[in-house]
Image (cartoon, rainbow, N blue to C red; front, side):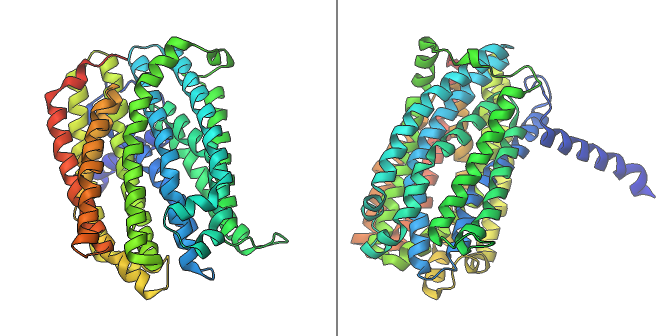
Length: 474
């Protein structure tokens, strides 16, 4: 009976809280309790980002059971590595949109927020159309450049061409979700990724294996399913962007060119894009180094481990996105100390999450890898990579919150410089030294990843505590 009287109200309150988080009701995050604000933002953001990683995992699962699965797994992994450049542009633009939209919302100016979001969409669309065209026409050459063998590149070129050609959907998914997050409506961002992934999960077996009169497209079918799913997710976003019943609603009049706003957005986005291009290009170099020193099987094992890592890391990145929105809105409301407190609360929750992820990697690596490949040597390499990279997960959890805190304030240059020195002047030379000169091959690359991430996190935390980001104007 004690449960009925004491625990039932707590359970009811928790359920109401989760309902609010999932529904995305309009909330002033600058006045409610910091813990409540962080969790209201973090829960849908974690679920949103976990869905982004599901795209690659679903593709890996189905293509891992095709003939010549090592070619297929390698193609999916290498294409995703190249697409991280596109992700970098999308993330850079979305962080600029989040920072400016959140600042305007904090200033109680939803019209200015919608106008800023529209300008970001104009810029991003123009850039993506150009880059996706290049990717479509040079798909095979891209795979060869990444270290794939001639047979693997020939086998996977259609998959890569479709994925690169549909990158406009990738861009819009990231950017529009960044706009929604800045406005404080993380639930819509979450739902759009869920819809896109459900469509991908349904369409993958249909397009890959064939069903109901639809021919089997094999590896190419995985790209067709992913592109279709993402496009459906974008259509859902656009509907809510223009049909919202809240104070934040976009209209066609917001898309009139506004050069001062565009310059302001670009000023934030360019270093933000460089920030993630620096990081993603580092991962591309590491992927090629693994392919060269570990061969096709080493590359397939690394890509499997990397996709699993990203599946668990992206929810943590989603939680860290809460810091970005809360920093922007609280700075807009002239509450810098509350902004810092929100960041430290987010750090605490993210560290707890990453401790759990570390335990999963150490205890369940063999079981997780078995879902994506049946080749024993590939499984062994993937497990080694997972054990090694998991050693730095707690540092990852802290570091990504620091990065998003800087970006949410509009200070995108600080993490850009940290990434430049941390990845290109430390991680890559260390990986090359261990893999080639010490002779550890792909294992040397695995070791360099957590070591460099730990160093980046320590430097980022020191710079954050100095507090210069509190003075940034956008």
